[in-house]
Image (cartoon, rainbow, N blue to C red; front, top):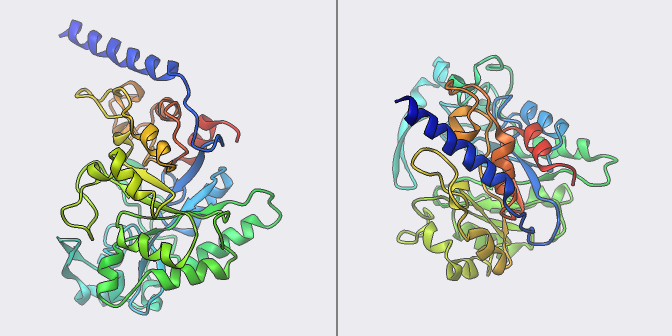
Length: 355
């Protein structure tokens, strides 16, 4: 047993060294990779709150990322999902108990409380909760309301006042086909809000992302703002049954994506897979193939807790403890990625270094 443990540790250390020694590949345009604050500084504040976004700005994020869903009265708000029992105190609010229901979202049955069943005024009475309390605690639960997209853009406008290089916004449309089917479309309110706050043209500090395809194509027909096709390691777009992300990530698939999008946002395991022991394996050709198609690559999601880190980066056996996130990020930067999503902005900025 002792020899097996020693061998495992040697393998982990060897993997970490190999990652650090890889030759750095260039980004698509030669610019430094961007750091995208995943749901804000969500490793330190409840995700998708103004407090989380403000901390991410303070810590040096290049972009902040709000996931966008809609209220019953058609207002864009920031939540990871339209089902909000994990991220708000709605389940503890007796006045909303009768709104608990089950719905089919992207082919899956989901039970809980849904933003489309609440007006904005009702949603504003709720308070945010930590989505991963077992890893991050609950010290900030109950402090912050659910923000609207307008409020997030107002925060950015204030933060960017006087800045030479503005901090950008990176919204994701969540379940756009589902929302469109119930008469609540993302596209018009999203583009209207961005235009009202000055985000116009391809050089604007904005990326719009989606796991679906139809929504991005509809946006491309109406706007020249940069678009990102999200991809996961399994499955495929909810609006294109029979199409897999694996096929979309092939060289031919990437050429098709490039016809309507400016980049891809893949699950990071599509770039560097994990071995059976949780070690980082050799990189795939995805970054190279995407760059050959003219697409930027922004993988997700980098987190400092041991639970999420590769074997060589774990600091202890405690899943909630913090490990060597910087080493994991450096391994991915070496592949030539053009940016990355992280819950831990300070660590990601330090690992990337100055732009």
